[in-house]
Length: 457
Ligand code: PM9
Image (cartoon, rainbow, N blue to C red; front, side, top):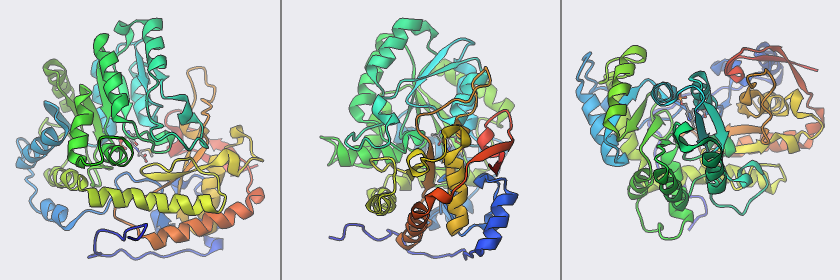
């Protein structure tokens, strides 16, 4: 059998792509202040900025869009979404939100008291922001290997280090821990999965101390596929069975539907506890909308219900992981430094190794993402010191990982697009010393990576 199975879909509707010439790309990236978030979509050839909301929907999802019940309250699409999520995830309650950070806002507001700790398997930008703005203190309890880009022989680099978690409980006391956040997969570690065994062990420890476990379920289907392919005892289980077991080791989750629900917008919060549910419902009307739409149109809830079910198809999800691996292996073969093993939603370039002439405080990953655009018209994203932001004293958080994320949208591009992407990165690697460091010319106070501007030093 062929190593990389072709796309498990036929293309029914197409969106033309155009590429600017090098001079035009130079003007565009300068105009965008060397921040790929500030480029215009029309100026991009292949857009690998994110897998968030960039999914191609299926014919069935588009049919679902036409079945939107746009009632202000009690839309039938909400009940479809509710039934689907409760069946597939196994939690008792769902509160819809406009996207993942809406769910993070609700969860952080109802669960965190000022001074509480929130341990997690590596931070995520919007997640940590909501924890901190509610007075929480994030503590990274991921296994140490997750911070080593070259460490290839760890199949579940997203695992929580139980000793670190126990040490935090001993240090601050269980009553000061708002909840444990378990992200599946771990975005900023390189899309690395968490093993079923680890989820089970974390939940057992949490229950012993009466601490809640809340999943960040954003890429849970990718995580389930890694479990099927890598963890003993799961090879014959379906993705649906694995996801259900994963979430049996927790008390709820936040979800950005823009990823594994195969839609362009949407999210939700789930929980088992009735009181938490009541409080979340009180808040959702303040920030999102009625508890039966949470900031989404009826049609979007319908597309999300259909998409989440479709995502459980092993043919779909194994092909997705293969596409990412295909790109990663081409780069590894050419000697380009990437995070290993290749993760679920993206290939992450190790910008510290790629641009070893640029110190981290002069933003190598930001400079590399800009250079990739200039070289090939491909848009990628910085995931390093700029994304990490500053601490309460105003100093940069300095993450060990300084990465550029080449993110693959779901069901959008083909292997030949990825071949082109690899060729561009490899060509750039050969002339990497020409890439210049950057300095800030504008830095917003919050989530600075979205809108900051730079110029070359
Ligand atoms: N992730 C991503 O590109 C989009 C925002 S940052 C550019 O990776 C996790 C693990 C995420 C995530 C978003 C959110 C927030 C929560 N958890 O974007 O609000 O990767 O739907 O979800 C992005 P929303």
